Length: 268
Image 1 (tube, rainbow, N blue to C red):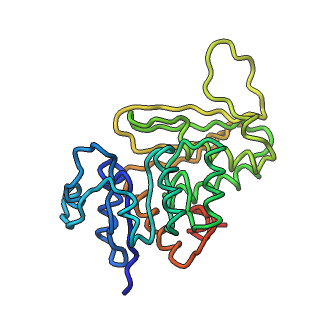
Image 2: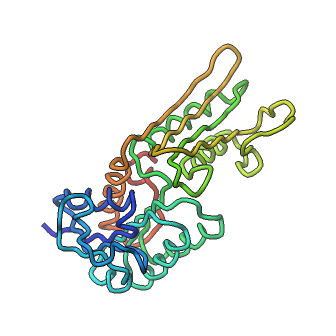
């Protein structure tokens, strides 16, 4: 069996460790490189030891060196770092799975441009369950398109740096697109003071940050006499890691193009 060589960015972080563990347990994948930022105390340590499975792959900050022999580069870090990795992968023909959130519209355009040369799976949430929720939201938005107010509530751990979460924003995009709205014009990010009556053509967002919450998302359709709640709760980062590996396998025979988890899971 020809295994797919995987390089992982941010391998000492919470998501990075989950990715390392998942790759080491996969029979068809090989951990080719584990990366961290320069100055990290984890450099030159065995990446597998972070999850209790020594593997003789030492954590490095040499991205260019790591890309030699890499088939798929998995990145769940931050926009600035991911974009640097993107250009290096593009120049070397290395495919990417990107789970980083917090990109600006202009930064997303750079992903689209790079996808002309390499194959990329970019998704705000790699969980199979969340992507099924996206499809459920399409159905709900089509059916509950009159007389229902829409609110999106998300909760994450105290270390998350962007809000609302990328998943919450994607949920809003799915609903707005189905309703024929422009999310940039419809979104309301938090409320304070005398806000007046709620406009029926808005989507409200509320963010909670605290503790070690992995990721909770609820979309509320509130009508007269009833409310519908569509909720997804992640209790382990393993679900995101397994989704990322499915994305890496999906890219095996792709030369270029920008894909998301709807493509990977056959939901489109």
